[in-house]
Image (cartoon, rainbow, N blue to C red; front, side, top):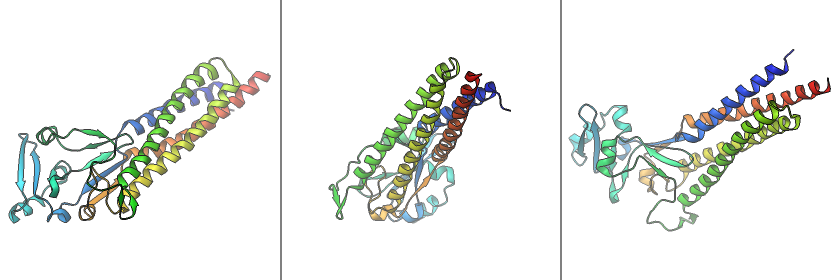
Length: 268
């Protein structure tokens, strides 16, 4: 028979673990990654900037030379993830990873300083020469930013609820033995799991939209030719978000079980 003290300990541990996973999921900016296929972009690339990690020297490769194109295709995975490519219309492409609130890149500090690019940037509508209507549809950048705003609102609400549950659950539900507070915490964790499901659905919808839309939304609105060379994938923050849903449900069950034990203990 599980004792009251055991359920209290399990509830506190589950609460702490859930809070930790939630903070990691929202604080990290790896919900999705975007990379470019160098082979498909070869005809559009004007130059490539790559850093020599042994001496922090930046190599600027002119891609108009066929010999340089062959050299570029022989880069290893680490070099491919940290290089910057210059294409038409003064557009610079590089591998990025994106979270709920901002988008960051894998470029080295030396290359960022050389190209005057920041490590991360807050997600906002891209500056581009397209109108708000593209091919009879709304600007995809603006539509995705609206989804990001909803996801950010869900994330902030989830964090606030997690903090409130921890404070009220420990101080009122466990230390003071208030049954109603304990039951409320269990119900709120179910609500948090529902908001987390909505958040994951939004982030997955954003990823699918970026894969399918006519002008994909990267650091700016890209043309169809550049979009075909761009691939977007889910990353580990999305997995942490899935884990948060499971942990919220388990924590909810523990708190509801705790309130049942507290109720029986009070009757005796």
